[in-house]
Length: 196
Image 1 (cartoon, helix red, strand yellow):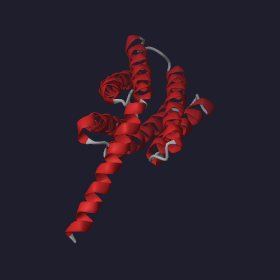
Image 2 (image 1 turned 180 degrees about the vertical axis):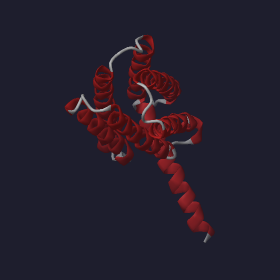
Image 3 (image 1 turned 135 degrees about the vertical axis):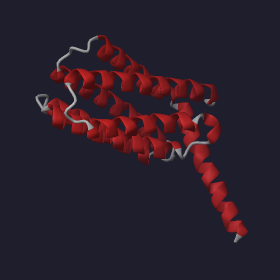
Image 4 (image 1 turned 60 degrees about the horizontal axis):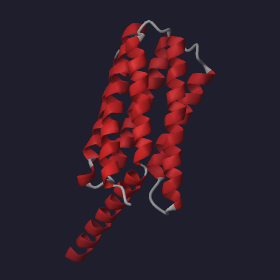
């Protein structure tokens, strides 16, 4: 019985090590995601009067870019026969949200808020779950923090869907800034650990 538990623990440590190594090799993708998020955050905070339709298009572009980068990381993992399921799921969710936002830019505030809230909650949950596969020394708590921030932000939007466009813009800007900063810090920690 103890041998089985030790084997399970060793297997879990191996999976964590593989996930951490995968993220360390692709630290640049995490950094790029963070930089894009920070840029969007600065733009939305700097110009809060932007129309909600324009904001939908900015959100759609970010979702498509984020989804493509997530799938790139998943493809690289699949080529190395490493775990890639959570990465591709997040990438597909992001691309789906981006395509929906581009297809219907005139969505009402309520529908847009519901779309963004659902994306934030699901994406944050998948990111937090993926973080559980990382080793503790590689800053997995930063990825968990990014996922939790996403879930909290999505829940806040879901509970206040009639919030004015200005407040929504500022929320999106603040979320993107925080999320991007956390991803940049995580990318720099992963870069220091990357294999040579």
